[in-house]
Structure formats: structure tokens, C-alpha cells
Amino acid sequence: MTISQDLFQRALDSIPGGVNSPVRAFNGVGGTPLFITKAQGAYTYDADGNQYIDYVGSWGPMIMGHNHPTIKQAVLNAVENGLSYGAPTETEILMAEKVKALVPSIEKVRMVSSGTEATMSAIRLARGFTGRDKILKFEGCYHGHADSLLVKAGSGALTMGVPNSPGIPADFAQHTLTVSFNSLDEVKAIFAKYANDIACVIVEPVAGNMNCIPPVEGFLEGLRTVCDQYKSVLIFDEVMTGFRVALGGAQQYYNITPDLTCLGKVIGGGMPVGAFGGKKEIMDFIAPVGPVYQAGTLSGNPIAMAAGLAALELLATPDLHDELEAKSQRLCEGFEQAAKEAGIALTTNYAGGMYGFFFTEAEKVTSYQQATECDIERFKRFFHLMLEEGVYLAPSAFEAGFVSTMHGDEEIEQTIAAAKRVFAKL
Ligand code: PMP
Image 1: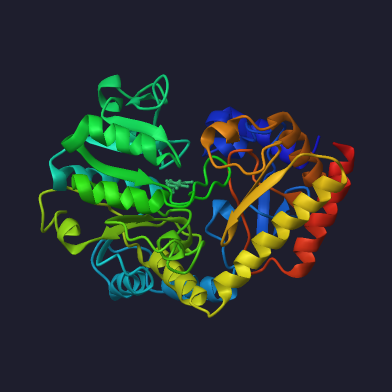
Image 2: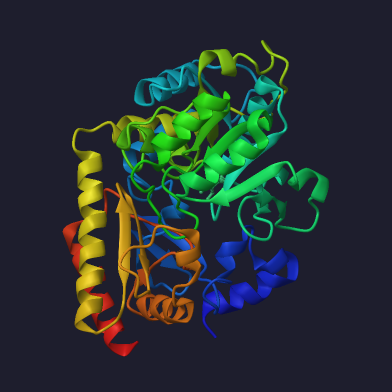
């Protein structure tokens, strides 16, 4: 038995499923999760002393690599002054000013402690602001686990939602409408049906929770137009894409201006942070200036702000995001080439510092439907064989992968070489 296996057995006794967030249990790939003891740069290390090139990066935050010395020092400096006050600090202003400077559609921003809180609060705000109950989301997009958002499409698209989990009243879920990602026709049809009932459209501008699926040409523009037409709030959930796809997020990359933006992951530099922000007139609808309630004991926590601010300052380096995208591109091209040589059908997607690969005959994957039709069993075998090669990929065929500034040519080429050996065995 490995040490990780032993720890997992112990964890099962006192933690549901042995983990504090489901995907960590390797339920998407089978087998026993690795217990991590430390991480540095592009690498993580498990309890058995194995080293891995890490493409999970704590599910997105670690865009500067693990344990970056500047972020670490910012945390250590902040700790000297106490851990939390529950009162305003100047660091929160610096953080808000930084976010506004990097993401110009954000005129005012409220900090929270997770992506889930960010999307949940943005949805409440959009409902309060418009006085409408219904919201529109896309099948396969994940926006955290708030009740309104943990909803899947009913039978077929263009239907009212049904709960994705027990514990969510059907009465609740029926206010969540769901259509297919990348289908503007379905968006137009549902707006035609519910005309002035839809408070907001929430979308991952690059879908990263059904593998990695960028928007097709015209999709995001179309959402902007439809939202303008029906006076619905357009919310970009940039929890994953923010500061990763480009410094100004997917909205900069695709040049579309949402009304509200949700942020998480990178904005905390590895600490628990989320944020939502956007147009002043909408943001001023939240308490204490406006009637929509939203709060948090640890919101704007000084240690978390120090880490996040340090991360955002580091990211504002010229060419950094072009270089990140070049890494994603090289990885994708390397995987495709290696698969082709082994006679394995594979296609890839990337945008900035996020990427995905699909075991499928399809030339391009642009829909949730296509993502679910890929060869998941082959993915599972690939995942485990890559792990044996010292490469830690996202343990699910429905998650995007992430590169960091610390993934050098050496790590990328080692990963491609490992993939070559593994494809030969698949
Ligand atoms: N939105 C998106 C797009 C996400 O990817 C995630 C988490 N993966 C969330 C929201 C929820 O964030 P958190 O896990 O911090 O609550």
C-alpha cells in the first residue's frame, strides 16, 4: 500500500468520500487520489515522495506557479499584522483599484471568499436589479454550487431546469432556464418565449467545466445583443478565465463587454477569494447603498488580499499571457502530433493559459453534447499512465487543464514525450 492509499483509507473514516471537494476523489478517473505534501513552481509532490509536472494548478489559481516567492512574501508580511479584522483596510481599496484597472468593464467590485459566492451574489443582484426571477445558463457550464446554478437542462434544451442534486427544490430550479452552449439560436428562441422574465444570462466565456470549449465566432457578441434587446443583465463568469485567458480575462480576449463579471481562483493567488463587479448602477444596488443583501465575515480578508494583489501585480508583465498561450498551443500541438503518430483520434482546444484535449474522431469540439460523446474510458487510461510518467493532469475528462509561467520548455517537452509513450500503449 502506498502512503497516499493509506491516508485515503484514513480520510474515508472522517471526511465524506475522503475529500473536501468531490473531483479530488478521482471519481472521474477511478483509483486512489494522491495526497499532496508540497508544491513548488510547475511541480507537486505526493506523500510517497513522487514528483509530478502539475497541470491542475489548484484548479486554476496557480498561474504564476506554486509557492511564488513574491506572493509567499506578501502573505508573510501581511500575517505580521494579524489575520482578520472585519473592518475596512487600505489593501481592499488597492485590490479594487487593481481589478478595475485590469478589467475596465468593472466600475465597482465586491470581494467574497469563493467563486460560488461570487456567482450566487451576482445572480441575486441581477434579479434584484431587474425585478425578474428567471435566469439563463448553459448546459455543461458550472458556476459553483448555489441552488439556482446547480441546475441541468430538463429533457432537451429550451426547457425549464431540473435540480442537479437532491436538496434543491424543483420550485427553485424551474426559474433556471438552460440552453446549449454555443447555440445562439436556442438563446434567441428562449428569449422569444420568456421575453421580459429573464433577469440575466450567465456564461463561462470559455467553458472550462466540460473540458475546454471556447465560444464559436459570434456567440458572445450575440449574447450581448440579445441581452441589450431584452434589458437582461449579461454576466460573464470569469472565475476560471479571469486573468488567465488574457490579463483582462476572456472579455478582453474576445472584446465583449459584460454588465457583471464574476472572478475567483487567480484573484486570490492561492488564498480563498472571489469577487463580482461591473456597472456602477448595478453594483450600487447592493447593501449597504442598495436593497440587495450580500455580506461576508471574512470578505476582503487582509491575508487573502495581500496574496491576490501580489499575484495580480506579477501578472501585469508584458507578453506574459502571449507566452502562456504559446505554452498551451505547444502542448496541444504536441499531443495532437503524438496521437496522430500512434493512430489515436484526438483533438484539442485552448485559449490563453487554459487548454483541453478530447479523444474523439470529431475535428473540433464546440458543444457539450460532443464533449460527452468522447471516449472517456480511453481518457481514464491515459490519465493513469500519464500519472505513472510523472504528469498530473486534471483527473476528469470534463475539466480544463492549466499552464503556469513556471511551465518551461523542458516541462512541456517532457509532457509531450510522456504522452507519446503513453499513446503507444493505449
Ligand atoms: N465558476 C467557474 C467558472 C468555476 O470554474 C468554478 C470552480 N471551478 C466556480 C464558479 C466556483 O468556484 P469555487 O469553487 O471557488 O466556489
